[in-house]
Length: 144
Image (tube, rainbow, N blue to C red; front, top):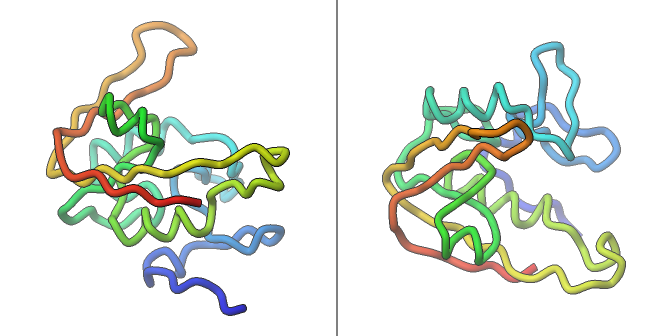
Protein backbone atom coordinates (compact mmCIF):
# COMPACT_ATOMS: atom_id res chain seq x y z
CA UNK A 1 0.00 0.00 0.00
CA UNK A 2 1.43 3.38 -0.96
CA UNK A 3 1.27 6.48 1.21
CA UNK A 4 -1.38 9.02 0.21
CA UNK A 5 -0.22 11.89 -1.95
CA UNK A 6 0.28 15.03 0.15
CA UNK A 7 0.30 18.65 -0.91
CA UNK A 8 4.01 19.65 -1.01
CA UNK A 9 3.56 22.25 1.74
CA UNK A 10 2.07 19.63 4.06
CA UNK A 11 4.65 17.00 3.12
CA UNK A 12 7.39 19.48 4.12
CA UNK A 13 6.03 19.80 7.69
CA UNK A 14 7.77 17.93 10.53
CA UNK A 15 6.33 14.41 10.95
CA UNK A 16 5.13 12.57 14.03
CA UNK A 17 7.50 9.63 14.52
CA UNK A 18 4.80 7.32 15.93
CA UNK A 19 1.94 7.91 13.47
CA UNK A 20 4.08 8.95 10.51
CA UNK A 21 1.85 11.93 9.70
CA UNK A 22 2.73 15.59 9.22
CA UNK A 23 2.34 17.68 12.37
CA UNK A 24 -0.31 20.35 11.71
CA UNK A 25 0.82 23.91 12.38
CA UNK A 26 -1.97 24.46 14.94
CA UNK A 27 -0.87 21.47 17.02
CA UNK A 28 2.76 22.59 17.29
CA UNK A 29 4.30 24.95 19.85
CA UNK A 30 7.07 27.51 19.39
CA UNK A 31 9.58 25.22 21.16
CA UNK A 32 9.00 22.46 18.57
CA UNK A 33 6.86 20.29 20.85
CA UNK A 34 3.40 19.26 19.70
CA UNK A 35 0.24 17.50 20.75
CA UNK A 36 -1.94 16.03 18.01
CA UNK A 37 -4.92 15.95 20.39
CA UNK A 38 -4.77 19.60 21.50
CA UNK A 39 -5.25 22.74 19.42
CA UNK A 40 -2.69 25.48 20.14
CA UNK A 41 -5.07 28.43 20.54
CA UNK A 42 -2.29 30.98 19.95
CA UNK A 43 -1.58 29.47 16.56
CA UNK A 44 -5.31 29.11 15.78
CA UNK A 45 -5.69 32.88 16.26
CA UNK A 46 -2.57 33.41 14.13
CA UNK A 47 -4.20 31.38 11.34
CA UNK A 48 -7.29 33.57 11.48
CA UNK A 49 -5.53 36.93 11.66
CA UNK A 50 -2.69 36.18 9.24
CA UNK A 51 -4.79 34.02 6.92
CA UNK A 52 -2.48 31.01 6.99
CA UNK A 53 -3.46 27.35 6.67
CA UNK A 54 -4.03 25.49 9.95
CA UNK A 55 -2.16 22.46 8.61
CA UNK A 56 0.73 23.68 6.45
CA UNK A 57 1.10 27.29 7.76
CA UNK A 58 1.33 28.71 4.23
CA UNK A 59 -0.74 31.67 3.01
CA UNK A 60 -4.32 30.73 2.26
CA UNK A 61 -5.76 30.95 -1.22
CA UNK A 62 -9.39 30.70 -2.25
CA UNK A 63 -11.51 28.83 -1.59
CA UNK A 64 -10.98 28.61 2.16
CA UNK A 65 -11.77 25.14 3.49
CA UNK A 66 -13.30 24.41 6.89
CA UNK A 67 -13.23 20.80 8.04
CA UNK A 68 -15.71 19.33 10.52
CA UNK A 69 -18.81 17.19 10.72
CA UNK A 70 -22.21 17.80 9.14
CA UNK A 71 -23.45 19.72 12.18
CA UNK A 72 -20.53 22.16 11.85
CA UNK A 73 -21.40 22.65 8.19
CA UNK A 74 -25.11 23.13 8.96
CA UNK A 75 -24.47 25.69 11.71
CA UNK A 76 -21.35 27.17 10.08
CA UNK A 77 -19.54 26.90 13.40
CA UNK A 78 -16.10 25.27 13.27
CA UNK A 79 -13.57 24.89 16.07
CA UNK A 80 -10.69 24.27 13.66
CA UNK A 81 -9.12 27.13 11.65
CA UNK A 82 -9.34 27.40 7.86
CA UNK A 83 -7.05 25.49 5.52
CA UNK A 84 -6.36 24.88 1.85
CA UNK A 85 -8.77 22.48 0.15
CA UNK A 86 -5.87 20.13 -0.68
CA UNK A 87 -4.79 20.13 2.98
CA UNK A 88 -8.37 19.43 4.12
CA UNK A 89 -8.64 16.50 1.72
CA UNK A 90 -5.30 15.16 3.00
CA UNK A 91 -6.49 15.59 6.60
CA UNK A 92 -9.53 13.40 5.95
CA UNK A 93 -7.23 10.62 4.72
CA UNK A 94 -4.50 11.06 7.34
CA UNK A 95 -6.13 12.07 10.60
CA UNK A 96 -9.66 10.67 10.53
CA UNK A 97 -10.28 8.19 13.33
CA UNK A 98 -10.75 4.59 12.30
CA UNK A 99 -13.54 2.38 13.66
CA UNK A 100 -10.83 0.52 15.62
CA UNK A 101 -9.83 3.81 17.31
CA UNK A 102 -13.44 4.57 18.23
CA UNK A 103 -14.21 1.21 19.79
CA UNK A 104 -16.00 -0.06 16.70
CA UNK A 105 -18.46 2.86 16.61
CA UNK A 106 -19.14 4.25 13.14
CA UNK A 107 -16.91 7.19 12.32
CA UNK A 108 -19.33 9.03 10.03
CA UNK A 109 -18.70 11.64 7.41
CA UNK A 110 -16.55 14.73 7.29
CA UNK A 111 -17.99 17.89 5.82
CA UNK A 112 -15.73 20.44 4.15
CA UNK A 113 -17.27 23.86 3.68
CA UNK A 114 -15.66 25.94 0.92
CA UNK A 115 -16.08 29.69 1.19
CA UNK A 116 -14.41 33.03 0.57
CA UNK A 117 -14.53 34.55 4.04
CA UNK A 118 -15.12 33.93 7.72
CA UNK A 119 -15.39 35.62 11.10
CA UNK A 120 -13.51 34.65 14.24
CA UNK A 121 -15.71 34.40 17.32
CA UNK A 122 -13.64 34.48 20.48
CA UNK A 123 -15.00 32.78 23.60
CA UNK A 124 -16.94 34.94 26.04
CA UNK A 125 -16.53 32.52 28.97
CA UNK A 126 -13.51 30.58 30.17
CA UNK A 127 -13.54 27.08 28.71
CA UNK A 128 -15.74 27.90 25.73
CA UNK A 129 -14.22 27.14 22.32
CA UNK A 130 -13.07 29.68 19.79
CA UNK A 131 -15.36 29.46 16.75
CA UNK A 132 -14.66 30.09 13.11
CA UNK A 133 -17.84 31.22 11.35
CA UNK A 134 -17.46 30.85 7.58
CA UNK A 135 -19.73 32.63 5.12
CA UNK A 136 -22.16 30.35 3.26
CA UNK A 137 -20.52 28.19 0.64
CA UNK A 138 -20.32 24.80 -1.00
CA UNK A 139 -20.29 21.73 1.26
CA UNK A 140 -18.53 18.53 0.23
CA UNK A 141 -18.81 15.37 2.32
CA UNK A 142 -16.26 12.60 2.71
CA UNK A 143 -17.05 9.24 4.28
CA UNK A 144 -14.31 7.70 6.38
